[in-house]
Length: 176
Ligand SMILES: [Zn+2]
Image (tube, rainbow, N blue to C red; front, side, top):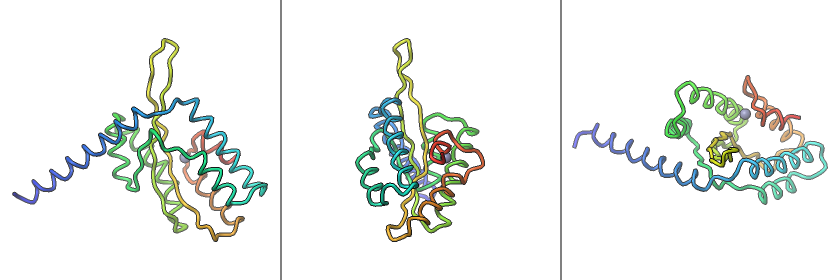
């Protein structure tokens, strides 16, 4: 077996693995309304933390209770994020736009030495004619160190959310 053969086999396996993860996620996708309700609750908690009405511990506990990655695919690698978006069927322009946006968030988080990962959340949207469409919601994630002072956490959160040139409606909501 030549080296190229091994390499191609590996790539094929990797794509097949991603394909089955995408398939599984689309089957488990929550409805968009259901998901947005959870996001509203997460946002409300973050706002309380920023106003210092709750501690970071309380924020984490609340987010943990709400956290539900059902119907999503996660990856730490940008190239894998691109592969996932291609598998879903997005064209290269859309792939580039999404990757650039999410990478801006992650690059900022990395500049603070934080661990990051990407998530593609699948959402079911019910049409008026009864049919169901699938939508995706890409996002960048990171962990803040527990021992960082709250003021610094709040400052860094703001910088990471506002890092991309064009913000999404969800970014805007987080910054309000
Ligand atoms: Zn964003």
